[in-house]
Image 1 (tube, rainbow, N blue to C red):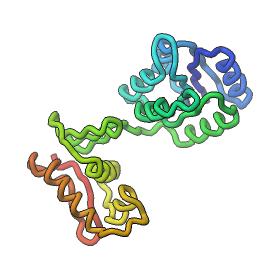
Image 2 (cartoon, rainbow, N blue to C red):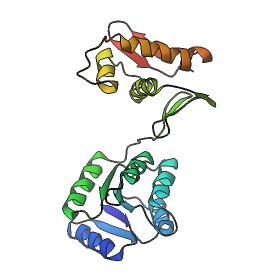
Image 3 (cartoon, rainbow, N blue to C red):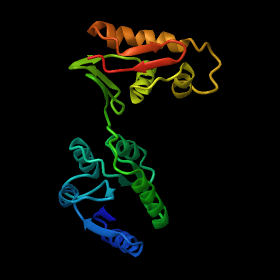
Image 4 (cartoon, rainbow, N blue to C red):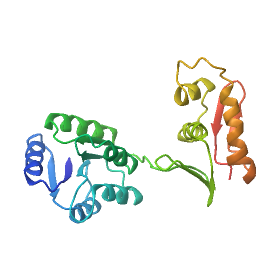
Length: 224
């Protein structure tokens, strides 16, 4: 399997390259973002190891460009120590995992193997059902080109339903995902939020995408 490593720290780059080759991987490398993106676009890789701070183009932009083009090659991003915001942005731009520098090569290797086993299936950063779109990073919801204002809890309920579009989810599953499994309040609170969502994302647009499955729960479908 071929791995692409993009990092401008030459000592780290060579150490990772040597370690991966010793484990039987073929390795391509780049020391700047422009060359790294070109290689990622021109070749098929089992996974990409991507630093954030790069000359020419940041790792964030490289990852976002690949995802925008429909390239779902697994990406593990290298972030600064204690860089919480970097880690959040890495995941929001489409990275599958991250490691903070300095890191153990054995941990990198194990995470790469896990990502490769998972494969490069599509994991869109914006969730869509028909013309209803949710962006978890910006908390933005639109129906077509029309923005929809939701409360934080309404967004969480809708995000959970849309992430399982086409499947029936129970009221208990919604409670466990959006509240928690120890929730001791009235479980009918889910019905209240579903009603709020219908009044915001469906009825004003003449849609009925949030279905109630009697005795089972709810399902989100493409209603045109």
